[in-house]
Image (cartoon, rainbow, N blue to C red; front, side):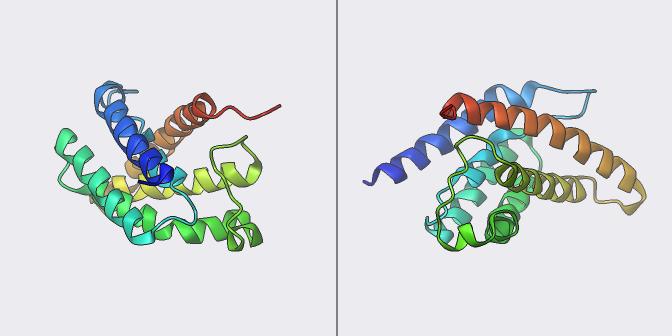
Length: 168
């Protein structure tokens, strides 16, 4: 097996385990949970198999759904994020994406932060739109998305720095 495949499998298992064991038990204000498991989708290699990313994103989301008993909303949000990921790369990195010279798990630059921010906001807005599914509660959806995005961004950037600290 290729070392990239082994790294992705290990990342999948580790992020899923950490999400289920630690982060599903954290409740900020009684209903806000961080979702750093989406780092698997964000850190997937740029030149990796697109179908493999979509399939593994579905399984990642459906396993989180099974543990949270959330009826498929995480799977839908993960697959949507995986599908829109190339668009977010083009928006954030421009021509660098075309040459596939991007590595997200290095030092945080404005381009990397914008990619992570857009991805997390997209995942969370889809997640809460499907979970709450009521137009009359749009302010609650936006409030939860904002709080969860901030919480997830803090934890995700911390995890990125712990896994692969930038060279000074």
